[in-house]
Image 1 (cartoon, rainbow, N blue to C red):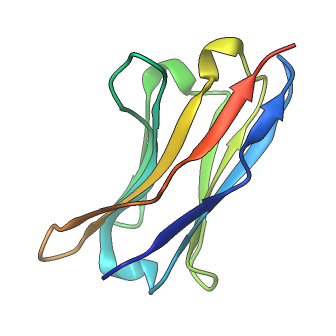
Image 2: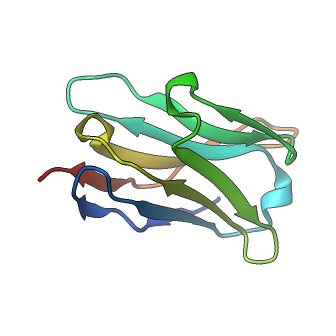
Length: 117
């Protein structure tokens, strides 16, 4: 079993920044994809950004330029830097990993991000 633990959420004013971190309980090289999704109230969960094959990066088109995903292979973490946050970025942010070979999917418990003045 894999555990993904998110941290870094909170309340921020519009235009502010937050950095989320997802810590995996094992080597992140074992995942085919790993990244971030979000779910706003009343909406479906959507991709924010993820790594594919440990090298390629895929961003939601609407978030390019404001959000940046990065990884630390030594720490087994994947981070999400969010800049110029807007009220519409308010959501629960989830870390997701898909295991290589088996393609089992794992989710973190989520971290709340609220953008409000």
